[in-house]
Length: 605
Image 1 (cartoon, helix red, strand yellow):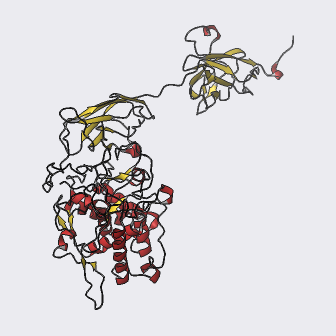
Image 2 (tube, rainbow, N blue to C red):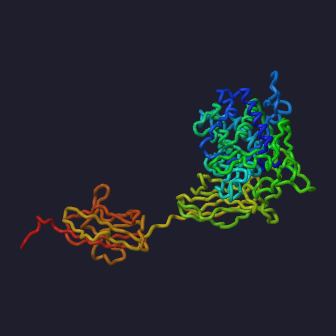
């Protein structure tokens, strides 16, 4: 039957024991990369636990695959503990890493060697984590761009045996709007991806289901906090930050050492798949909620390894899922909506053959069309978030919903509207109802029309387009203007007014902030006209060069709706003059300005 890597049951006691044995063997052997002080080499037996990083954990304490590398005798007299074997013979199959996946790991190493040279990130560490988290993206079932043919989802993080993490992405990545689930070949929880997501293949998109993006993001996470991964303590700390479990640490380190001994590329889709019976769960972290080992006592967890045969299958042919009610108290839970796990087949149902290498894995239903649902025309004001999110439904030819479909949303056209993180392309996953919703789209300052196009990743299905329009910001208006004081404005010729002119604009009784206003010195005989005439004598303002001007534009009220005019000067004309203020919205105010001769120039009859 098709591989069920998506199913990850809780760890069993046997798995824990095997992982502990391998960890002890690695540390005792002082294998390359494990040399250090005695406490470092024996921190398990000494009771010392490396401190996890302060960053949010990547997978939320989710489950992981506990398959171990092929083992061989160390060849020392009296030795009885097997060690990770050299990649030869049967072991050579396990040393094969799918070509695209291997390329992603090496490119992530190269990128981080440039951006964080002090981290000393080895690509083999990414390969070890990728093996444990997703079996190298389900044996390399990825397209030419490195995106998985179908989503790889971890268990629902609802606190039942794993951490409890309520939904943080609106189901955009994991198809679950209630709780989060780890996503993609490197198993990021959506909230962590929001911080650490990277564009590893240069397509302008940060997609946790893409091995290039996920590998680069995982590398950046492992290198955080100035860690040097050539230092054993830093290496342990980084791995525990991924999943805070000593068994997880031991499993990753065993694959890390194995891959350092030699690997080779194999065609995509032909990598060795993990044993679905050999899974474990992290201990969880205190800040994330429930402990992962809660229920990992063998009563409810899946079967662990038996500690006898860890030679690797040498073949990509998957093992069947546990039978409901089978031995070792294993359970077969119904698939969660949106999961890539189709569940255990009904007895008598033909078992599908594994996919041909290099072709997409089969899905229960084929997507025939994308249908826009909800609001299909998107509008927003410049600088604000669009009220509606693009949403589509994946359907079969007869209109039935198709869950677990990767839908890509792309912004097309001249616009500075963007998805979160400044992205122009994002990927969402259809849920059990066949719908996938894009993250919130935010308008920039560019007004006009553009299109958001939804397409199915890896399939030729007609796109669904969402016309989008960004409107200009509304112009703040005022329907009333009033002076903030009642002082008589009086000055002498050849001088200036001692008091400033301060006004307040309101709209429907409330302060009108940001309202554009104009101040003009007008002639008395045009005061009642719709368009009064600017005066050419009497009081005036000064421009930036100190020259007289009698009209000021580009004035704007402050946050409290107030406006204070610049200093007003007088020429040699005496009399009563008028200052007219107008605002957007039609509010006007006329103020009298009185100019007299200086007292020393007054004459008596």
